[in-house]
Length: 142
Image (tube, rainbow, N blue to C red):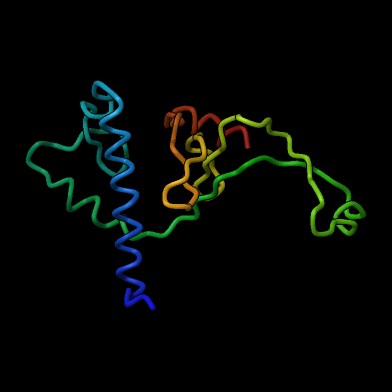
């Protein structure tokens, strides 16, 4: 019988993911452009001054919950098809096998990635982040 509390199990899972991320970082060479990008204030229009405390500013939004969804694909089917579904039924999606999966936050596409498995749990490795200007362009089309 395990003596781990839910908090201890959560710490263990967090440690596993942290280790996987460290291994990924070690495998990829060079630094990213994000490492040298300037910090911006809440309105994203002006850089934070050197005298300001960006950590205090960001702390105000860190606990706001958002819905993160990883989307495998989509399809449209008539209701009569849905009523005929049973265990073992296959629903064809519009995505091809091996295509990047969409990562959405509150329904808006923010990234694409590939499925990874760490300690028998699924995750997603982000392969492409949607730029803020591209996100705004997509939102304006909706």
